[in-house]
Image (cartoon, rainbow, N blue to C red; front, side, top):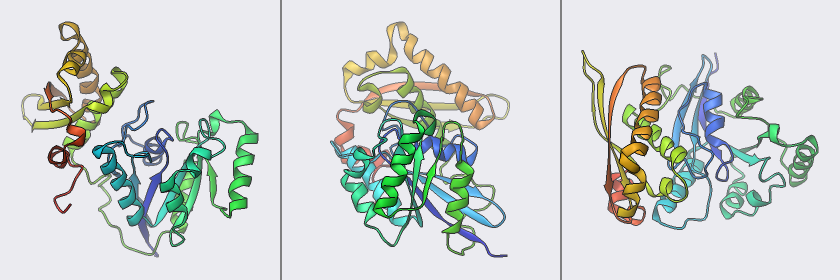
Amino acid sequence: MEHRAGYAAILGLPNAGKSTLMNAILGQKLSITTSKPQTTRKSILGILSEEDYQIVFLDTPGILEPGYLLQQKMMDFVMNSIKDADVLLLLIDMENDFTGEKLFYNEVVKEVLNKKEKQIMFVLNKIDKANEQKLVDMTNKLNQIGYEMIIPVSAQLKVNTKTVVEEIIKYLPEHPKYFPDDIVSSENERFFVSEIIREKIFELYSEEIPYSTEVVVIEYKERENNKDFIQAEIYIERNSQKGIIIGKNGETIKKLGSLARKDIEEFLGKEVFLDIRVKVKEKWRNNENLLKSFGYISDSE
């Protein structure tokens, strides 16, 4: 039997619903999702394996104009994903960008649309938040430009996500599976634990705090007759942010730990003891050595 396998990069502006779409397709939460933009910072790999095909999804950071080194490295993840992918899924946020103006005027998107060797699929996301006329107008606009592969979806409600998969399969090359069937991501447990903690930071704290923090799992110890032990460190950029993270009498960080532990236990399927500490790493978002230690820069760069 013919077997197809390949990579599909999910691209779009911040908060377009890229992570929600991948999670919906995979049927499990691999990428963290929040209502705030720029939640995803790296390309997160999610694998959908069936008997006759395997799609390796690349959930990417939102496309933006970099303001500091971390964002430059986030955009490197986007460009590398574009290069690696067989199919490019370009999401249009039908709630906040229903004319597509924000998307089409973006320089990276213009570059993507010029890649004639790549199969581009337009995914009109959040159709539950847009009226029918807006969908018709956007479809007509894309048709006039010359694009026919257009799929309206609601990633949040899992509407038409199966259609997205069916269309991707058509454009995958004949190829054996890249990964064993039982692997859903190339990332390890430490990565997902740190991402869950970071998600809770985005949910609990406002303004600049979520964007100024990085989470690293320092120790992960499996224990036979006790809860697994996890020690994580939250890095912030300024001393003044430490008090905000911890909160009065430590109440806020206790809440953070409680929320994160619950989701970590659900993800791992076991009980854990979670120890969270806060440290200051000044201007880490512009520090090349720190970004390398956090995994944003490879040793080859």
